[in-house]
Length: 278
Image (tube, rainbow, N blue to C red):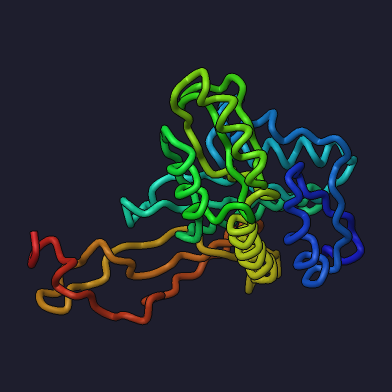
């Protein structure tokens, strides 16, 4: 279905460096990046342009725009978000969402990769020594930094800093007028190898889902549509909030299949039971 077709990757931040080799090897596509494509129009990590849509809608709009610009009916876009992990509330996480659109076959395949592998952080500092300590913890200079007057100030932001010389120059230029500097990690893929590795993992997950076909009609993208709670408590037998099964659904013929005990557990520890441990 995809062999020998062109696939446009909607990026200006060199994500194709990790995505393209995986996709070309697994699907037989030929990847390209649209010329002069400005993905920043959909929002920037540094805050100059706010993301106006949710991550999935943003990724979809980005993908469709790149497909139109390249006159290509097969496209891929990703959208990253950085915040506290959804389950580990005090741990920062990289939440990467990928969308694969095939207009020819009317397919839309989506995957999400949430990883604690990230150097995402920011801090208000008042001395160059503090800045150097932050830089070391943020994996500088292999991972770039951003300097600004304050966390919310988008004027005169210095991005993509990858050398100690530029770091000191940037610090001095802001510090001499402000007395303090806000430093943060640059989360753009081309400046953040750790994020790039998570994007690669997300791409591998996408390939696995593309290769998962519907048992009835053979359409790609046969994946989890719903996680059904209700795994019984091992002590009282009452249903818990833990996952009992995954519901797999085809987006073409609506065939669905329920897979019980996806985590290889047929009962849940009473610790997670609302009745035994209210």
